[in-house]
Length: 245
Image (tube, rainbow, N blue to C red; front, side, top):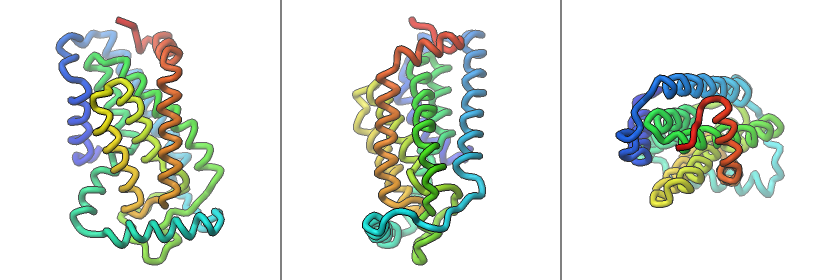
């Protein structure tokens, strides 16, 4: 994991964890459960990376012109119009917070420091969000803007379909879950999520419409996670990952 990603991830985790770790010493059971959580996280990451990214790069935009024209104009206003070295540096860091790895790292850190409920639910939101987004990404092979817009400034050349934005989905799903559990930090959680979504357009990886749908999918994933919290925690309990205090 890139050091630029780890630092902000750890900072966010400290805010959420607080002093809980002092009241919850790490036990052998916690260590074993954490290893299981890490294995599950690795499986999720492997499946997602191989199915949604890989070497596949669609070349034809199948969206109607009413959407693609607006998308292109808005994309260029952000990607070209706001381009400068400082924003590029900033958004290259921020965008990584929407990747699967940082969110799973936060989940594991929350878990091993005693906030097992938060850790399990955040982890579950990644899985639920992937189950919602993955079929759409596979069914709608939309090219990324840097592949179809000649003047696009591409800060990276990711593969897979542009629609919808997975980073945005994960950021808003995490924001929904964490703000539901820690209402005092609702504003910063959603502010970070918005910055992640905006960064995907700025960096040339997604059209605005991809990001908007990513927001909707993320909120849906977060809502489903909280809505079915008891069932999720019950399932985690069967796997030995969760015991109520």
